[in-house]
Length: 320
Image (cartoon, rainbow, N blue to C red):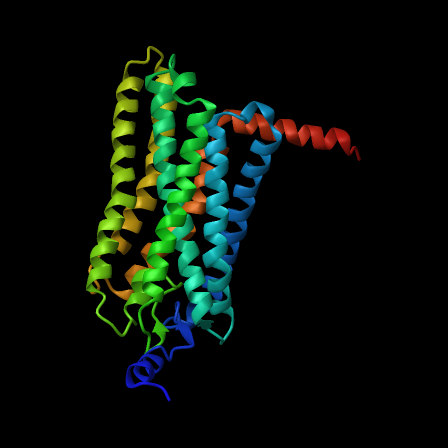
């Protein structure tokens, strides 16, 4: 015989699956949205995979700046793969349900890759700061050991954030309703369905977001302020213009990612309408992985040279 407490817990955790509502309140836009998201997803995959392959094959790019970019592309491909296929299924079929376990698996990987990207962007800004502001000491500052530690720190931090947060949310009872008014199983959207007091978790999540999102963002801004001062001292006007252009595009991508992630994870429960939350989520889960290859790599002359070199090598080895 089950005790009253056990029966209550069994009844409480009765949700076996969730319903992802996505953009179901705009049925007339479903087909167009599917087309747009599919193109964005394919371009994101293509752009990031090209970067991963170029940096892997081109020996001259095996330096910290490009190896950080390669890691960023791996994170972006993975981040998109966690969210986009499920969203395309929701948009293209009547079946919008996602099992309890699949939902928490998706939450885990969103937090894992999102957290890793937060730290990785911070580390990349530090790398540029060291290269531009301390060019003579750069080989010592960013030696192979330091580079490996920073990469490991970014990935391990992402794992820790995802493990702690997902296991805590997973421990809450879910007794229905089971409709998630969002595009994916992100923590704030799932938490609204928990049949328990989530106040302590919200304090933890708020504090965690400040440490994981705000701290790297502030460090990036400080790094770029120092970089801009260093650029202003450059004697060449062309060099200044090129460096300003690069910094501006980096900051655009970083602000888009951190700004919308902050607004999603630091907001009170009733902060924004569900539609606004979906748009903010799209900007860091859809736009950032799409823009990063363009902003960080494909505008870069060394990347272009390496791409052309590999292309000519391929054409020479397979003549028509």
